[in-house]
Length: 112
Length: 114
Image 1 (cartoon, rainbow over the protein chains, first blue to last red):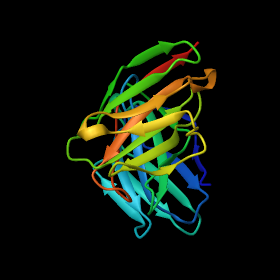
Image 2 (tube, chains in turn blue, cyan; image 1 turned 45 degrees about the horizontal axis):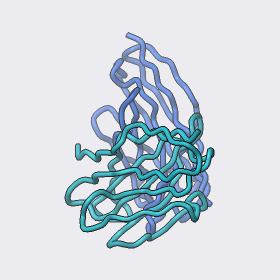
Image 3 (cartoon, each protein chain N blue to C red; image 1 turned 180 degrees about the vertical axis):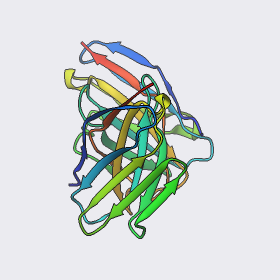
Image 4 (cartoon, rainbow over the protein chains, first blue to last red; image 1 turned 90 degrees about the vertical axis):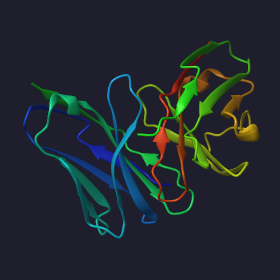
């Protein structure tokens, strides 16, 4: 079945820095890739997604890049703020069942 | 954004007992999901449910597990009987459609089986 890997597992940056979170998947049938953020003690919050017919998607300070050939995604967050501190999860699903396969998460800490 | 509710937030039970986890999905959503996360491990898909039926389930969805949503009330995950390895946080999610549609997650129910 599908496997999703994320790197790095944790990241500590100063406020204002940019960060890059990498995600790779194995199943070429995966076509939809939503990302979620989980702040301490809170629920998973949807932040951005991309479909396999796109290469790039941007919303506010988030840019998501997708490379179908290498089965790789990267999430770029600019101008980080302490409120961005959370665990970020990459996930993948195929078109049919909508079951999400999650990566292990990247714990981001933004220091003021 | 849309909020999925889960009741209870925590549950402690003895091995062999039955437990029912309740999920109140977003009101206009038609697809429902359960995921399981053991402490320190990745979140894993258990089952999805649409129009009164299980659409897909994973190997983690053992015979002791069942789901239902009677008459548009709570979407429930029942485990009977429970085992020690069922201790985990269980997350419910819902979406308007299946396929490539955003799933909205509840805050989770932390289940401890003693």
